[in-house]
Length: 428
Image 1 (tube, rainbow, N blue to C red):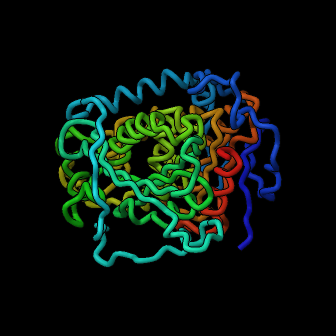
Image 2: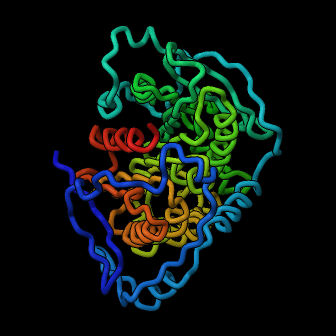
């Protein structure tokens, strides 16, 4: 299948979405070198303002009015301030902050996937580029551990790490964190871990909240979402796992075998959302490649494109509908659920604000052009603002958005290859 790159150029009189060859983003000098003593780490916060002479923004699905556009364009985004506000939200529902500690763990022999008929194979993950090494599995080493990220049962974070046995132990290696999709677990992404390890990475996966070892049945995640709506004391959709990923960064940056300036993060679907928000929250994730995860939550509500995302975790919305006395799920129900279980997700932390805050770190967004959960039409503003932020930071080549034609909500071999190439370009 051919690849088209959807690139949102600088705003002039209007924003156009052009279909271009991915060769447009040929390698160019980057403002984020692999090793550069003059670059402070973590990166210093950058203040961005988004302004345009545009009167309207046209998309294939909707038109944003002049007043709405002006309001959005004239908002000044202070990345560090926004990040601090997000961290305050994360801290607001902790069961008890504790010092980070590490406990040993054993390999999981029967990983839990919260589906009635769990899949056994992923063509996309199996296609991941790997070194042609004879007896590769015999040369890999596996670590299993728990990080204690907060008090309570869900504060025990299961971590799986794969690397090569024979790598130089005195050399600090690049690392990539891989995040699974809804209802899966860390063991599900093992093909990616092994492929990256064969190429000289330390590859890490975790179980997100209420998944894998943190689940007791195939309904654990569903029940956690409903409980969050009812009680408002947890944030199982995205945000609680982001807290874990901040703590994971604490741990990874202290390991003697990992270069703390070369830690990448990626994920599929829910994992892509985790990667996006973890990178927004924590600048120690230096290269980012969310796959079929980035979307505009408020845009979907305002443009009646929320149904597919809601269907992916529908039970919590049905409970909310009933509690609100509604006969069917509508945009009011959707907004109230997001505000309750992930405060700010459909407002101040949505993609038009959090995506630009990742600049200048290399960011690749890979979606399907026909993905109903991550509607392409809703990404005009986030991507144009992102492009502007990277241009202002003098590293436009560090931002890339790919929408694979004819693909819905599905991770494909092409997406896996693009993410792999992105990490090789910026982490090696």
